[in-house]
Amino acid sequence: MTLDDTDKLIIKELKNNSKITMKSLGKKVNLTGQAVNTRVARLENEGIIQNYTIVVDQKHLDCNIHAFINIYMHKISHKPYLEFINKQGRYILNDYKIIGDGCYLLECRFPNNNHLNEFLETLNQFANYKVSTVL
Image (cartoon, rainbow, N blue to C red):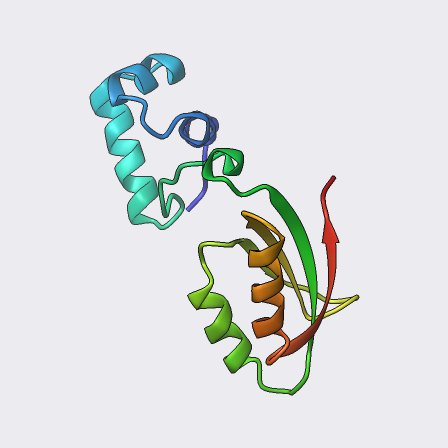
């Protein structure tokens, strides 16, 4: 499916505010609410728009330590590591599979050093790591 300029503008507006009403979105892209609703439904059905999300300021969740953790795998199989990561969702903002320095790059937020240390101790069962924290 090829996106036209209106589709791209709809996506841009939804990225800025996914709670916008179809009527308001239509005004921004010069369509009626019904016409923009039809386009949004088509974008969803085609899999171009897949999810609507929120962004939470982690500082308000008492997550004061922002860390990037380079992961170096012990073994060829990454399955145990990935299962561990899936269970630690409350701390992990992003888990990137990378090429270069390491196998994965975790972006995490922790309430304090104790939580970070507990996480790292358990992580060490699956992989080696190098931690960088944001000042």
